[in-house]
Amino acid sequence: MIEGNLYTQLVRSYFDFLVTEFDFKLLELNIKHNIFYEVQYKDKTKKVIISYKNLSAHLMVVVSMSQNKELSGKADDVTVLSLDQLAINVSSYIDKAEIYLNDKFFSKFYANGKLEMDLLKAAKELRLCLRHFHKLELN
Image (tube, rainbow, N blue to C red; front, side):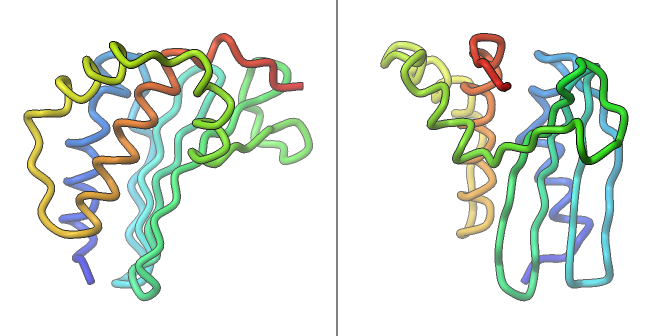
């Protein structure tokens, strides 16, 4: 189990590229006791949600986007992709050189324990996916 403040600190550190490279804004930090933690980032058309269920040790990263290019909050006009789905959709656009450069970008981090390793892996995957996000057809 991890404390909520440490979880949000790790997420903000590993996923800082969302702010510095992709112009996302930190939207929300949610800590529900010692049970559930969530960090949300948002740009004009996408929201990235990084959540963790502490009791079941389940990490989930999703990207939601609006069909009408603006996040309205209505469930019927928003598409949600898990990081796994997103990675599958963009994998054909990513080459070995890009993976190498991405690994180099994240080499400053040292993950300690399973959750930190999972967060770092998710951050690496998400950064690669967002670099090719504009190539996806999400209709």
